[in-house]
Length: 324
Image 1 (cartoon, rainbow, N blue to C red):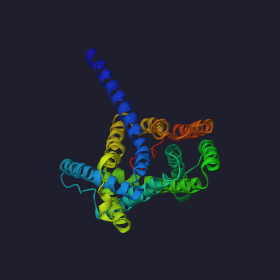
Image 2: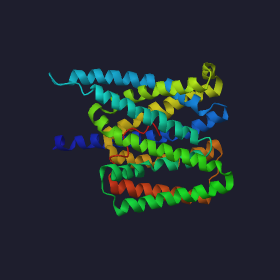
Image 3: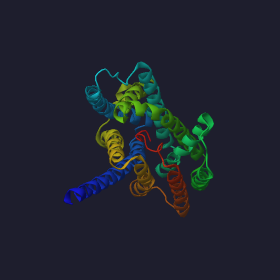
Image 4: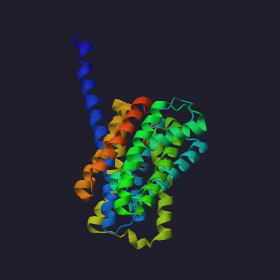
């Protein structure tokens, strides 16, 4: 009898470990906008911050990916071909540029014009674009529940947009447009990344994708900045280390661990706490305003996304969110 019941506590402990990892990953991802805002306050622009993110994160992801690929090759049955063919490699490189360079650049740039909390809320709605792309290009069914969830979320975004536009001026339009562009690019990344992750595994996929985006970011930096702009000291240097580790590498592995232990659906739903963490940090660390309009708008956005993830069983919601 003891042999039948003994695994239960262990499974329960693993489930709790998965929940903790998912929560920690969501919380760490939520620090991204805060760190970028602090870097802007130190006089470090978004391209320099993005370059440092790649300088810190790419070697770590690349090392983990190479080691994982070698292990994968050792575990393959005799005579089985490697999943990393030339077409798959080229596709992964292209998807990496879209997700880790274009989407990230647009998102980072948006934070020059809008609050960290508003940026995070808009970016949180990218699964709606995933569904939209699926309906347009793959003729996937859109249900009334999905449409209702979309309307609820975007009502919240419209409320915050209206409030911030009246208070902060028309630069809010540019910031919102940039982060909407980021959400569109990230949705495209999600759609195209899914079959590649299925073939390669998330670790190898991320390593190749980051390795593709890294040179693009560095070329962009060198085309717009002198090399000496990378020489950052003091608090600025600590922030650059944080954007690569605390806001990128650590949450990526926490999310991966959460997915492994409790599955992508539960990890995705838990990940919806990240805007709340961003709001708390934005108000407490950055001193951003949080009015009743922000509270109502945030509640609407989160409510819509929660409805969507519950109805959709969000297999597309969490692949690898470290671009966001």
